[in-house]
Image (tube, rainbow over all chains, first blue to last red; front, side, top):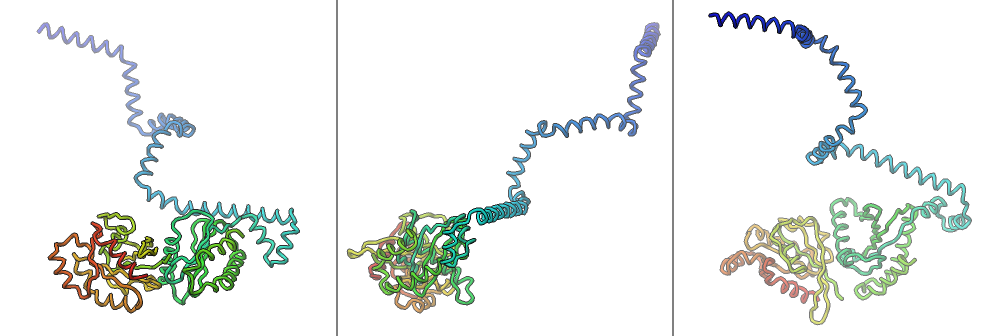
Length: 270
Length: 160
């Protein structure tokens, strides 16, 4: 019993000591509790800290979170490639359109400057005698087109009659066959009133096709070709068909060498 | 050198492209890849001291031949009509198909080829051929290459 009293006195003394030593701490703890449970007070205390951190993030976000963001973007790109493409595609189209317009404006400007600053007597004379507009001649000078290959092909069978080329390409007989197959397919699938496929275009490469009764001529051109150049080429092809090809009608099989040489002279080495 | 256009035609999955690949490249693949549109390739054969270049048009298979664009057949000297010995459905319409092709190309050489002989026994082949409504010219296996070169050589000989 005496021991119990002793303990109570001891406890009492300890409690008193705690009161003396922790009085300030306890009052601060009470104050903190009141702040923590009162939203308005808490907001007043925390807001400045958040604002300061937000200010810091505004300045340093990229450097602080660069690695995490890069990882997230990589992950997103891998998992939702198609989705991202769908989102980017319309903007990409606009960007390309804007770029092309800009380049066309630059080209136009360059041509206008060329007209203003460089009067070319030769060009004017050429324009006068050939009937080709001087502006077309300037465009032709600015963007060069080159005839890379010429094929003369039997219209129905797709068998190559003759060809001339600037470059090494795959087997010409197979090219002529596939070209005829594509031509037949397009004409069969979309033909409503006996029209012929006249051009195949891919990138800066064009294949211009001119069909005649028993054969057709296909010309592969790299670079830009203006409307007047194309019309000029069509006339040249007609003239070739009329003056040269008619000599070989009915004997195509024995004419490959002679015709190929002619094609080179007229279209490639011109 | 003489060039001749040859058409490979028939129902789908009968092995036209496999015959084409076996003849041109001497290879065979078990993978089935359907032909889209048409594929053209060339092989030159030496027949009776003459070089003959065969331009082979491997046409996408159709259940009946009147579904194939007729312009593909224009100017062809030969037609190889392929059927699959293991699938009777591929020669169900053979009589009307052959009549259609003969009308389309009256002067052309036409070969009826029964392919995939490696899938049947000799007795089964005999029994199946007896059921086919038109005479079969050559029985081939594009897989083993049996009779493939012979088919094209025979055709080449008839074309010159």
